[in-house]
Image (cartoon, rainbow, N blue to C red; front, side, top):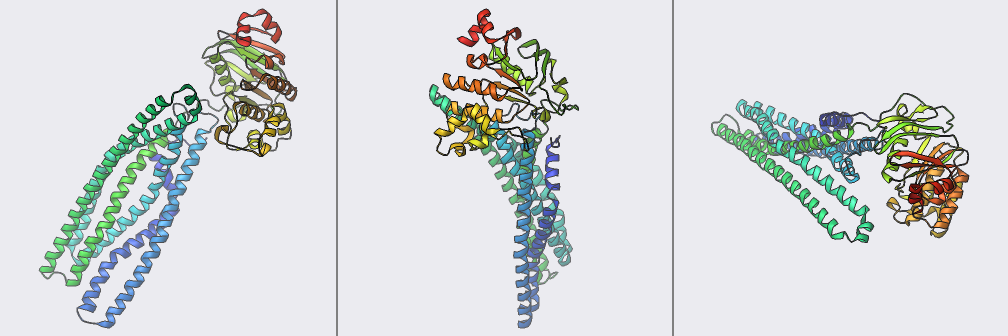
Length: 567
């Protein structure tokens, strides 16, 4: 996985460090623009002193030409500098988004625990965007400081008193602005938390829209979202009030500083300490100060919001993995022998089971929760609380999860499809360069060939998000074909035919046995049609193995088995 970040400060630092060249270029050009802006009042003062006061037409045209050149430079430097800053912003945002997605998809898992998908999506979009904007804010902040420094130097050359007013007043103003940004930072973090939760709830409700309509739960869902949305709105309004208060206070303090500069300049001109042109320059520079100081106020606000978002991103990136990577590797040729020794996890208790290479095994759990616990251990979404699971004699906890899943695939019952075509969904898990994978055979075995005949573009028919454009049975068959096409040495399938008719189920059962011949396959199901084609079936009752025998024998001698399979 990528690096883990202990704090939001590290996220901000790395976001800026990764874009230092663009930030440096933007800061250089932005500083040039600010210096040019500060020199404009100075040039106007020179025009007044050397051309207007002395009625020198030649000097007037000369200085006007110089002003025109300065304005051309201002336009170019701002355009290129702003482009560099925006580039740094969007590239940092993109880099953070990729890092977050990589962490969420890490084979070790863990990042999704306790977070709805919508919340993770909000962090990867809105929070990443706010952290990326810190690069732009940094560039504008450096430029504004250079403008203030230029202004102070010019005023010092005109009058030491004027220069000191700017040099001493600006740090005080910046410090006060930083203090005023603290409430905004905390409220911005709360705003993003509430917004992420609202997005997550909305995504959750949309995903279950059919179910809600089926049970008549629309009003309850609307009430739930209205409450969540109202909480998000209140958090946003609190953050907006904090930002408005900060902006208003900083603007008032900035006005006070400008008024002091203008007042001191006016008194010096009245005393004859500075010329008329220098007074015009001083007043112009005082007005110029408004721009950099407003920019610094904006920078403070962006930094406050960026810090809050960076803390949320850091929390995801620093989430511990659900399972850690071991140092052992599997044999080059995986036989497919699976052994469970004293396995205890959740509702499972001391499960001992040997699955021979090439065996087609059925597993029936009288409690669905126990089946889920078994699947989580086999897929190594978690490590068992006690005991071990081994593949070809190697404990799963000693393997890298990514390497394990190239040899052992667990196809869960609620597997989602993705946007793309039917064929693209089937081939999504095929390892590049695999010579044994046969998507056509997988689609035939899973009954997708029949599905394709009913679709407008056959295998090339577009599938909408989560496969909602297909029926439940069609989605199941495509998901099963995807698992079969992956062609793993060990395949574990959970209830792959609950939404298909009995005739199709029997056909799939025969196709599944044929295509997986010679490779280890585990069917965790209560389907009689699937269990009938297995070599043997293991009965899990009350979290323990109660018996192991062919399907027909278990039907004859176990009441619990008959209740689970035939009811």
